[in-house]
Length: 92
Image (cartoon, rainbow, N blue to C red; front, side):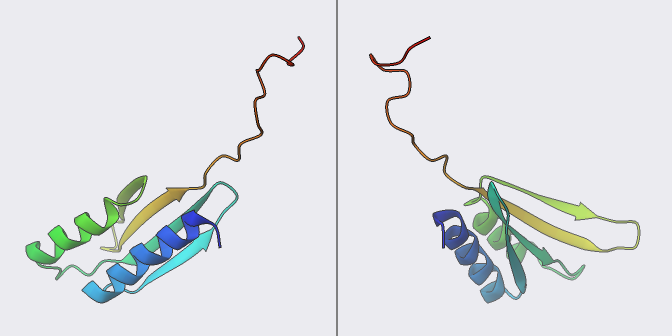
């Protein structure tokens, strides 16, 4: 599993410990975490949730008019290195 997947799984596990079951999805360039957030989440738990998702590269909250709230977080995959592409042997 790529490092992004490991980080996303760790975020999901920490959210689960707080009481928010989360799902992880692998994509080409990132791993994502999503969890449904109940309306009854206390301010203290919100602080914990924000500490957890702050470990991601990006995060947010999607709220709908139906009172559905989905927390999401994205961990980018590292760009593979290809060596000294622009070094002395590079021809234009």
